[in-house]
Amino acid sequence: MASSVTTAERMELPARVRPVDGFLLVSLVLVVATCVRAIWFTPVDAMLGAAQKIFYVHVPAAIAGLYIACGLLAVASIGYLWIKDERLDRLAEASAEVGLLFMGVVLATGPIWARTSWGTWWVWEARITSTLFLWLLVLGYLVLRGAVESAESRARLSAVMGSLAALLVPFIHLTVRLFRGMHPGPVVLKPEKPSLPPEMLTTFLLALLAFLMLFFALLRMRFRWAGLRNAQAELEAV
Amino acid sequence: MLLPLLLRVAQDTTAYVARPSGPPDTVSYMWAGYAVALLCFGGYIVMLARRIARTQAALDASALDASSRAGGSTSR
Image (tube, rainbow over all chains, first blue to last red; front, side):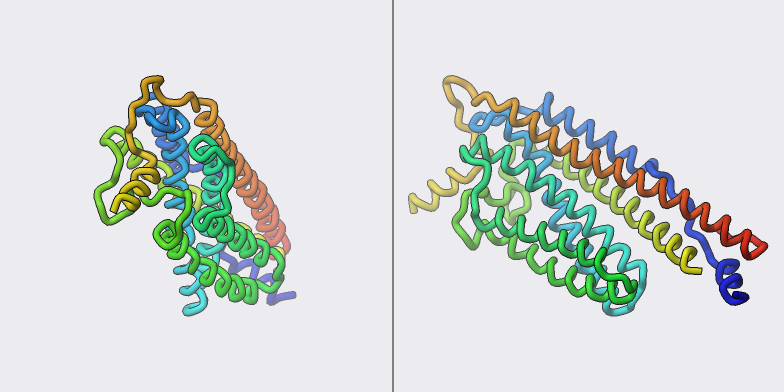
């Protein structure tokens, strides 16, 4: 009993976390401003009409969800397996959940755009199918985390799965070059000059900045919430 | 020679080809896309904010309980 009292007394609680902070508010304002610019102040595509404007949400969400989130998931997972720092486990967990959200937005907005340009909601082609597969893998990663009770085993097993799941990302990036499919090739992330007119490129770059800020704001909140949750679990265990 | 060129043009979503009748009316699809994105991000932010508020309250209660049992206070 005496030892548990000492543990409680010594325990450092994490700093208070506000449900909505300034960084998130700034990123939300930027996202709204970008959407206003995209919808009302950016030219309409002559071939696809207004539906092409989904591009300003779809592509930034893909860059944040696939490249940034999965990259962070892999780096944090490998880092955890190497140095066993609990913060890396939390970073991997937060990246996976926020990445799942952004990839979900990509998979939800893609078919709406596809319906107007391809005449169908869904095509089982390489890029779309492999993105869905990655989304399911990341979902599986989060389900796995919920299924393992021991914190150490949970962190280790999920770190292995997280680092393996992220291996799909380079493959997804190359699918448009490796396979013939309906998904268009890169418009901006390619060795050549971006194939967008200046007004569209400006809106796209603003959208990219806004959604990346939103991604990091959500990642920060999710990371800090995981710290609170772990602290509460430790306190309850005392 | 011609086939790769045709494929590139066909796959280029930003190609500007003027039509006499103007661009197709796909405004409702644009709104649907933005609404879905708003719903996803908004829903997640609300869920995360509720999680944080709930865990913070539970943590405060646990800390208070632990400190009262210990007869001292936990440090923040």
